[in-house]
Amino acid sequence: MRRTMYGTILAGALLAGSTACGSGGITAKRVDAAVAPTFANLYVIQQAQHGLRVTASALQSRATCTRGDQFTPDKGPGEDWVCSIQWFKKGPAIPVAASYGLHVQADGCYTAEGDAHRT
Image (cartoon, rainbow, N blue to C red; front, side, top):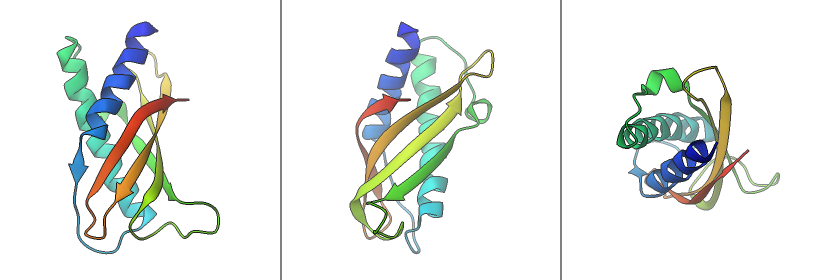
């Protein structure tokens, strides 16, 4: 349990330091599609640092990102994006989830901020 918690926090720290860019309109679907594989790849690196072998595809990570509140459309740049990321740990298919705040720039680049909040 403790190792899982630390792994999630480290993955959160790695994601917090990550940046990705893309072109085209900024939509929730595109943000979801960018964040999920970025998280998975960073998680694989983090697990390797602990001597654990995990593949990004085995994680089956997916992201659900929304912007602002119910009155703000889930598109466009802003500092108010929130992404919930779900993935499966190695071993029995145990789902894990964490939330991150995102700052999405007008050019499609984003950064994840803060620590993961596991759910």
